[in-house]
Image 1 (cartoon, rainbow, N blue to C red):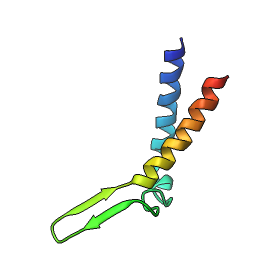
Image 2 (cartoon, rainbow, N blue to C red):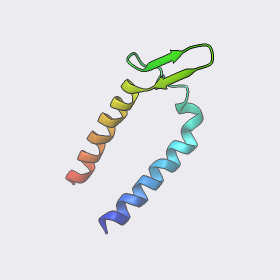
Image 3 (tube, rainbow, N blue to C red):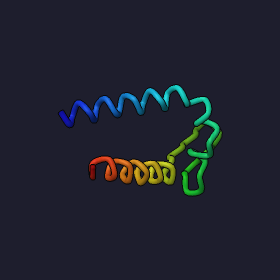
Length: 69
């Protein structure tokens, strides 16, 4: 029962994010201080370290609050 609720909730969240993506892409995520971006002549490396940490913290808080019910 809990797994079904989790999968349905995650599906709804992904659907909402997919619909809102044009607006979400204008937010500064992915260009935060601490994100690693190296650009050379024939090479580009991008590692969103700070963005990943921030998303992880927000999701952890959200899931902690959701599981507390």
